[in-house]
Image (cartoon, rainbow, N blue to C red; front, side, top):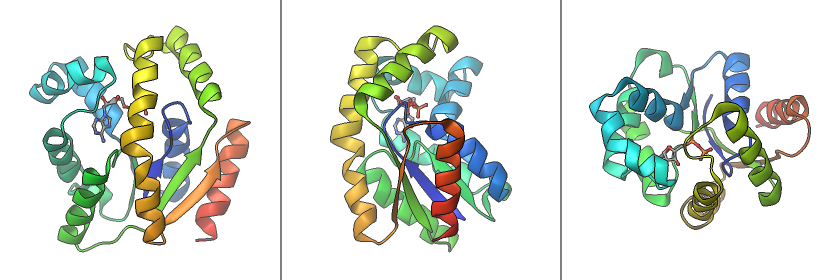
Length: 188
Ligand code: ADP
């Protein structure tokens, strides 16, 4: 399976991506996790991404696209992958198409985890207390949700137009959401 996961920050993409990846035996590739690891490791990529991330802004496309292209070319992604956090705007969507056609493969599904904005804001603020992520403060969360609405949400229509969109309700119990996702993917 080759799929992308869409949904607002706090919808549970990371949690669900890890579970689905295990279920289907493919890597979950989270651009946010890769960036955070690079920031922590003090790499050049981390330095290029840090200021954008802490402001809740998107890292520039050239940086992000190059990183994803490299990651998708690795061996473990040959049989499939689940992308979490990419694409995040329509230009990245077009770029993903180019990458996949260069690899000679096609996307099977774009899975959107839908979530109520009040609920995700609550979840993110709660996570802030537990994980202490720098971008989980209220003004930065607001900024991330704004960018989601203006830049990322339009991708839903892009994938729907290509017959790839699968929407799954992300509200409620984590296990229930996983079960819904697996059922949705299996019926594809
Ligand atoms: P969330 O979905 O909760 O906002 P992520 O871990 O997916 O968190 O992303 C954290 C940050 O990493 C984003 O706010 C952004 O700065 C950067 N980032 C992640 N993916 C992308 C991407 N595809 N394009 C640009 N920036 C990205």
